[in-house]
Length: 322
Image 1 (tube, rainbow, N blue to C red):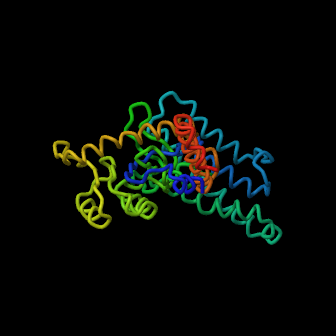
Image 2 (spheres, one colour):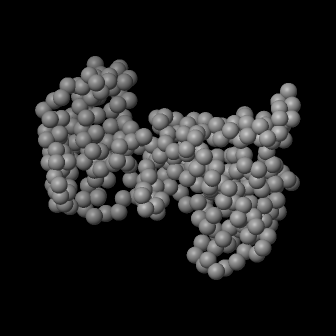
Image 3 (cartoon, rainbow, N blue to C red):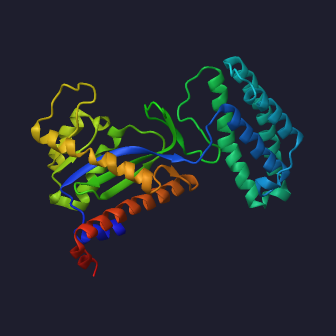
């Protein structure tokens, strides 16, 4: 709503579109097979003990056994492949027995009316079982697609970044679209780690829908490159697309496109501002919907900061809100 108001009042210039993706991290511990299996066992015990909150959970013999097995892994200075396999195999046995026992408890007539236990078991039966199965595949050397990295935030995925300090981040992928004069016009949070090129038309289509004939050019980084799609969208939307070749860095786009692409660097600074000043570095809300809310508030914060800077430079702009 706020962004639409800015567009209506003429703050946003829609002639150019610059788009890029970044990671919206989740507030979760570093995932390991051992920690995930331990979480499954604890959740199964919550159902078995019929407790509403984790704080009410009694440390049963099953939990003590799981903690003892996991401690072998955590206390070891040399976490060898053989050690990981032996610890995980033992935890898988405990987890499978616990899930089976929890299923029996959930089917009891006296428990079927207790909604909080049924919801716990449904998550255990889906997410917990998948964690056990993916661990088995990992131990067998199989490549796991769409790997779960958190029991509670099961929508979050690992996002390889190629950075020296942080090669992998855990969370969702966030696409940010920015106008030529520095306002965020659109954004979208994605499940997993889809390729940037799959987002190309969505970004162009949304911008064209809002700004119509005013929209004349867009700049994207190499991850969005697809020669056939570039030609198709340039003809379809009557715009210039400045996207450098993904592999061949010697291939030139032309002076006009180079000029548009060079201005695209401004979105890197916008994303950096969002992470440093508006909370886009890490989502503290739960679930995928929580991440969407968190991202929307961060984007709104970015646009508010931009409005305040523009009004400071030109106080007459305040009259547009009258």
